Structure formats: C-alpha cells, structure tokens
Length: 508
Ligand SMILES: [Zn+2]
Image (cartoon, rainbow, N blue to C red):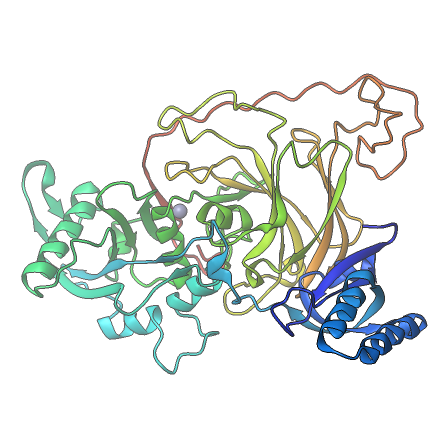
C-alpha cells in the first residue's frame, strides 16, 4: 500500500511465460470495494498517453525477441492508474476450491432408518424421504434438498450422493428385550428404546434386506408420527463420531435444518448461542442455534467447510498492538475463503491449561468476523438481520474431541459501527462499508486496552494503542487491569444433545 492507493496485479491469461502482468493503481476505497471480484478496468484518461507510448515501442520492435523484451519492460515497469467500470461479482467460487490446503473434502455416508412401531406409521416412505434428501436429475441447485443444503453451506467441501445415503423403512415390535434392555415404545423413550431401535433396525436391514451397511458409521433413525408422546425433543444426537457408530434420532416429520443440526453434532459441533441470551440456541445466524441458515463462521472453521481469507488467520505474531488491518469480506457462503479468524494467542501462550479428556483440545479463544446475506432457501435472515457483519467467539480447536459452544458477540450493519472486545482480547472491529448481498469492508485492530496510555512510551510510539483511530496526545494514565483467564468447563468425552421440539414461531 502506498499512501492512498493500492497496487493490484492483474494477470492476463495470454501465455505461460509469466511476464504478462500489468500493475494497476486503484484508489484504496475502490480497491477494497472490489477486492476478490472480477472487474473490467479502464485506464484513467490522463495516463493513457504513457500507455500508448509503450505500445508504440512494442509495435516498433522488429523481431519477436525485441517484442518480448519490450512487453516485459512495459508490463514490469508500468503501474497504470485505473478505475473500475464494471464488476462481474466475486471470482468463480468453484474455481480451484479443491486445491485449497486445509479445506474439507468429504463424502458424507449415512444409513437412514424410517421407523414405525406400535402401529404408528412413519411420516415418510423411502420415496418421499429420498425426494426431501437427495437430488433428482431435474432438481435445481436452489431447491431445498438435504444434498443441496449441505453442498451450499460447505460450498462443495462436503457431499452427499445417492450411493452414500442408504434409506430403509423398518417396522419394529412395540415391546421386547429383557432386564435392563427391556423396551416399550408405547411408554418410554430412554436408552433401551433409543439404542434398541438402532440395533433392531440394523439387523432387519442386514437380515431381511440383505444389505451391507456395517461400514457406515452414521446412523439416523427417523421416529414415527406420535413418537412425541414419549420422546420430548425434536432431535437428538451424539456429539462427535469417534467410535464405531454415531447416532442421530429425528422425531417424526422434520425439516432439513433439524437433520443438519443433529448430523453436525455427530461431526463434533456444539450449540450456537448469543451474548446476553441465556438460551444456548440463541444465535440466529447458525443452524446449531435457532438459525434457518448454514453454520456460522466459527462452526465452518471447525468443520473446515470454509477457510479464513488469505492473510485472515491471525494471531499475536501477525497482529501487533496498534496495527490496523483492513479486509473485504465476501458473503460467507460465496467464497471458500470468506471470513477472518483471530486467535488471541497473546492472552495465553502457551495455553494455561488443557481439558482433561484430551490434551489436544485446549480452549483457544478466537474471534471470527464474517458477512452474512440472505439467500433463499438456505440462508434466511429477517430484514433487520440481513447484510450484517457478525463477530463470533469460539474456544474450540479443530481437534475431533473439541466440542465447544460458539457465541455471537456482536452484529454490525452500518459504516463506522464498531465492536470492542475490551473485556478480553482488546480486538476492535470496525465496519468501513457494506455492499448488500456482496461484501463488507471491515478493519481489525488489536488494542492494548480501552485507553491509549498503556505504560512505557505507549503514547509516543506512533501506534494507535487503543484503536480509536486517533493519534495519541493525552497524558499517560495507568494501564487497565489484565483480564482473568476463563475457567475450564468440565465435560465428558461424548454426550447427547437435542434440539427443542419444533414450534411454529421458532423452528429448531
Ligand atoms: Zn443440538
């Protein structure tokens, strides 16, 4: 960056010689607005003469090597002031996404049991379930099927296929078993019923249908209508999938969002809450909360379905106190690298403790900033929550046993709004501009505290130590009290979590 201008290098795909690169100068605001997008540029008129002169030099060269040499001179030495005259949107999100290191590339395999018992029929037949679950040749990519939903939210990093999804209808006896395994679907919905239905369905499918399913870890039982009388939840799932099996139970008719919520528990995700609301599902921007949406940025990072922007995975080394970094965030689910994550390593490095069930699952306090826009039918936001810059905190790691809740800390939707994490990391996020449905420009600054004076020469070091955008002139004041490290949460290695029963006003 030089003064008020930013140099971007544009590549013309003319040849493989690597010399067809022309530097262009764009005004910083314009460069930020269109970062990551394919644009048509016009050379600013006052500089067109110089550019033409270089072309004349090339044309005047008499042989191929002279032309090549002239082209090199032109492309390497001339940074041309330009302006954007047309945007074609963000560069093809499908281009090369498989090649991004660290991004998930998985085919989801599941066995689905459509269960009936005690004369209670299942809401679905295999055919109707398949229609909700998988695409047919005529299904468009914007139709709400589970296959499309997962493909959209993961931008193709996770896939379901016809052959990876095995669907069976099974009819079970109403009562049976003995001792502690005795079950009665009419009166109870405890472990004997929940695990009993899984093992009975498994043997029916193997013995009656002759199907080989033992290689599939994820088992999804869809309970019959009226199961609500005994099973008082909308869905239930094991968190994580470290053993031979991981189980999900869905209570009767449910939307793909309930299925995705429970399946993502199997993939290790916990719930998504919101600061100031004790309800652990209160995050409206996450399917692991109350959202009719994809996962939030923290959960996407946990899944590696999308990665931080290039240069957007920061820590105490790459983000020094008082330095401001500006990012253009595309809409979260429109680019495989779409958000910024800042691991507050300066707060605990090395981590002050590990959690007892896994030395690799130490909490890693990170803040993530993302930009979210409505896109039907997968990302549904009310008007007042559309086009928001969201800041989430997340203490989890990407280790399989690390199950931590995410927390929506702040939602910003206007230029100059900012969020200061003065209580812990000192990070300051500020919205510079928002292009609805397209992108948001935010600046991120790591303050040493809410005041400029932080001891030593902090007021005269030329840095904006409190990230208020002002040059310090005030007399020193005492530094703020250092924050307390949080307590480790006790938690077993795996456990079951449900979603609330579906309600008309607030679908789970
Ligand atoms: Zn849940």
